Length: 135
Image 1: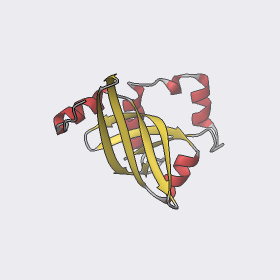
Image 2: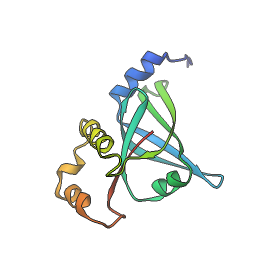
Image 3: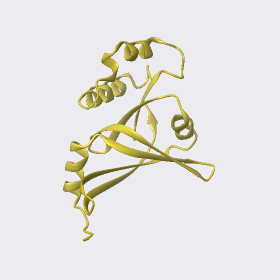
């Protein structure tokens, strides 16, 4: 196995192609890592979620890390790691940012086109409300 550094341009191209990664956050000296779908553009990655542990933790400690890979076989893969700061895109302050995130994420996932997704957008139950964020 050979380990080689990946150029900035190669990292950006990989991030444009991929849409699934692992998001890490921390609280009280504990780590939490979960799979997420993301959309990338230079300087930001966007994610949607529902209210759960990672959102609660990131609201208290906004420092996050996203790691994604392209795996060709057992000894040939490329990984990219991004560090960022959680920024929740909530209305009305971030209506434009939320819409932008939705449009980018639509290229990879059509979750909100289902009736369940539409119901999630209208409900006040935070356990199923979609939350968009940027890092």
